[in-house]
Amino acid sequence: MQINYFTLYKIPANTLFVGKNVVFVPECHSTNTLALELSQNQSTTEGTVVITSHQTAGRGQRGNSWEAQPGENLTLSVILTPRFLPVRDQFFLNIVTSLALHDFLTEQMAKEVQVKWPNDILCNGKKLCGILIENQLQGLSIASSVVGIGLNVNQQTFTNENATSMTNETGKSFDLADLFVQLMMHLEAQFLQLRSGALAELKARYLAALYRRGEIHRYMKDGQEFAGEIIGINEEGKLAMKVDNAMSYFEVREIKYI
Ligand code: BTN
Image (cartoon, rainbow, N blue to C red; front, side, top):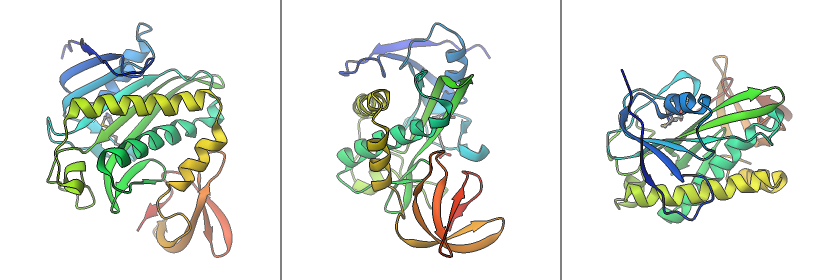
């Protein structure tokens, strides 16, 4: 299928680069896939956003799919070129994206939202937003990064009982274009903090927003259930958990929340 890309509009948001150039496609398989294709074509500028009203084969973490009813939600991917960031610090892209969404959603919904490691955004224990970050590495640095965001906005019914939306949590409906502009500003603010090297502060804020931190809950690894207390994350972005009075560190695919 031939895809026609076109620039929908220049966003009037007060940003330097994030969301200035918007590639809107009425329908596509996956904005992350389109953004990856665009980012491999040298002509894209940093901060370009690919957005669609109808994503037909949205991709999630761990090979899962991402479902979103057409026209009700935000499904978009931002192209960044964080060459300043060493590969060993790549989890900071998850941190800044999660923090941007955390701050943006807290502001919009006037409700407490939390970040579930590695980077889901929850409200009342249900998933409001999913993030899929795909990095292209070049040597020891990150040549480009596609930050995919699926935010449930006005959708009211879900096949997954653990999913929710901004509407379901607030009883209000939201203007997608307004939200888009605000979200771009939050993303840029956090990304600029990362670029300025404020790693310790970003990590501290991420820990403060972390779901289940300091509480004992049940988890599953290799079919075995166990109790653990989330303490934080290590330098590689692994989940640091106290299990039987010793520290354990988990990769994204290794552990399931119960
Ligand atoms: C997850 O929670 O598993 C991550 C979901 C990420 C979904 C978004 S929607 C926009 C972008 N395009 C995709 O194909 N996936 C991400």
